Image (cartoon, rainbow, N blue to C red):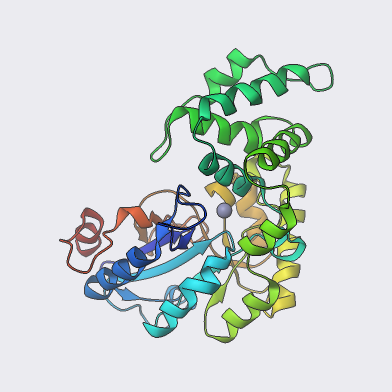
Length: 326
Ligand SMILES: [Zn+2]
């Protein structure tokens, strides 16, 4: 046995073609089923508790183990993923941000997703954001537009530089009050005036989560307000994590040995200490790699994105599948 563990990360999983938001970046439900076919052919699906037990010297994991993880608490997971996993006799671990679940408020990250999906002219979004920055200069201490562009105008694995710039500006680069204000305004203009109705539709409720738990799924923390944790002091990181554990406790998940997924995959050295103090068992990053249970830190387990594995049982073995077997 080679001690490698594949952890797969999902966000939106829904019927997308022909839906109200056909441009949302997510996994088409039929492709999710196809990916489970592929996983069935090449892997053995395990749960986080299996992983924790194996690393504590208990029952070893089966060959080529794979863990299914779902971030952000979307009602997609209750509506579409849960029935598939139950039918296919698989477990998954779900990481909902507590604020979205309990307060029924849109997270900035999701406002931005739907804003980008509902607007075909992202150049115009950039100019609207930059105009708002310029007119807020007297009230906030801000960098020049040139400096923001130099820092944040960068392409990523899945995004154009323009989209990364919009996302980073509204996720963490601007002061929180200003970026929320701009995101709210654009969300109202491009998506809907009814934010709480939209949030109600978008996120699972505490009842949904309790039911998922009763159906054998695992639930972990994804923080309270879905912050970039490195933008918070260690004290504020601890507060945010603590508030998320209150929600987990309400739905029946113990604080002892909880599971954590870093919002945006972002954390600092101090975050690891906070998780350790609070008796976290295992935490997942967004670093793209296979986890090695003999040498990876259990608080820094990397994950593949759903797009890193094929979405059909008939597909040839992907690079990451071959790598898992070596
Ligand atoms: Zn997230």
